[in-house]
Length: 416
Image 1 (cartoon, rainbow, N blue to C red):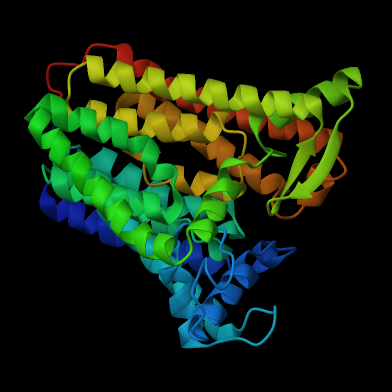
Image 2: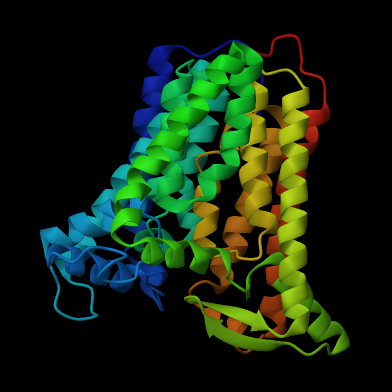
């Protein structure tokens, strides 16, 4: 966030800001349980409870039952399932409470990790308070999706990895990035940035060690399940990689805009646990999305690698990578925006302020249709909601652009 001076804040002030932010986060979390936030919720927790119940019954994931997510996600399903196994597809009160408690803890840990990043970057007090307060209040902008998705778990891991890396604990940081990949794959887009940061700052040998540690963590968590059921693990990964054009993605938003403006035909389908667009046009846009996403990420990674390896540029490149991955992907579920909340506020200066405004807009627009009017958008293609979807997706593109373009600029003398 923007700062008015370069004087770093004291540790006492950072601790105070962290406690206040966590208190605000508790308030936000509480408000998500009352009023309009409780209406028409679309839940993933019944799926999580089924996984947890089966694990509690002694079933082996991937071998005895299919799991959509990688094995690093299993603890947040197993622990609530062990706490109170359910007996049907309705989420038991015990499972819901335990799962939400885990997610609340992950959110608080993410805020604490953000504070450590800001301390290492020697940010002024205004920047610290603004960044942590934004993260604490952001749940109110995005809505109840936080309560029934496990994305705060990988988001907290990523925040911890960034804190370790900017604090000089680069091996710990890459261990955490490896753990994050096993939880929800997307932290893999941060590995090239992290390795380039280490290579430029500490040399090739240390970068190779860090890469080996990340790979070792990934292998250690995937391998037992791969040995027991290689087909089950591969099906889980293939399910994620083969997903069609999801209805809230940028490619879909462009097709829906063409549908309303020029009567271009679009067809809805439900598969892979989401609502998607079908047909040759949707397939073309899905392919184009993957290509554009890869090219933008490659540009971000090379731009960072060719510049100075300062901690500020590292944080900026990390935020840009996550924003680009979300904005240009062929799948863009509402919970993906959770990944951005602990990272985007860490970007400094005017570009950080602009990024915060754009993220606020994207979060708020998402809640306009999800969950309250989701099927009016995803199935009925309601015109007003379709145009708001395009506005949200363009806001995410602008967010990625604002953060990424700054990587080509020269660092100021006080950067570290």
